[in-house]
Length: 383
Image (cartoon, rainbow, N blue to C red; front, side, top):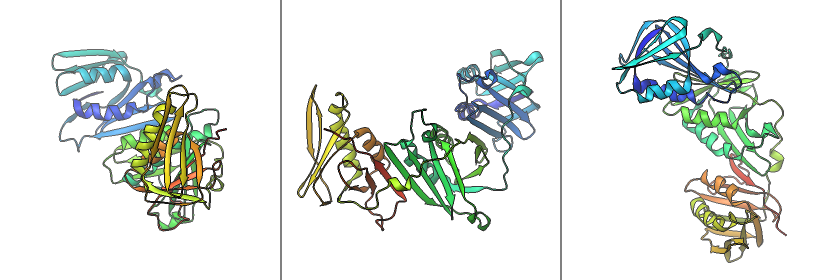
């Protein structure tokens, strides 16, 4: 194998693939990046067995920035290869595989030789049936990921909760995540062919996979999703992103969302985020990471208290407050994560009681039963 390529183009595609490469894998060859070259272009592949990423650098679309001199393939140690490419001075790099998988990397007056591995030893990526393609608008799907992954669990004791449960049914995609202390749900409409409207898909995708996916797909208008029994493939232009699916049954989250409330306040999400951030300055120093919200007929107040440091109180500016007086305590970090997903818009916070989960929803939704975007937080009991 021998080819020449523009250095910046190679760096960009290599950084995408490296998101799937881990130095801690138990399979040594997976610490490497697979490079294949043929008449169509260069394919870079990386995997940690949970996530696999493949990206094509086509000859035709890169304005003659690629020259394929000889077809072939090699697996090179990803960390060293990446560092070498980034530090070379010239914009043109030539990569050539010699005998015994020795690989020359040359640019201007610099020449590196590193030991490669036979490309035939690299595990094959899963084969996914492309007959059932679900097309998603990229920007909206990235928003769904951003709104839900915040509530995935980081505890491996319940692996199922480290993923986002995605259900596709009747032209709607429902994404739900919960770590048992909070819950995020987002529902969007998707354009599905009539043949798919009768089908239901129900998968659990690891939150880490979705975070990496959202970092890779940027400018493409749509992304294609294909599902098999234990893998999901996302295809965007020349990038193929594979992720394993989590096995098991996701808890029924519909019963966790309250259908009524006794106290409601409407206020700006960003203002509440800033106030919560200030109130948590002291609570983070104490043993109990808790802030308290007090609501009555003419005042809404946020407070934080740390016996070791001191206390803080702040009256909140709000658009409306109705229902029963209430004093409720909650984890400020959960509230801040939830509020960031709303940006600058007004939100309605609905409470049932001081010990029941409360919800944060957009204030401008048309229907009180509209759960298309909802953040739910379980309060902290204080005695």
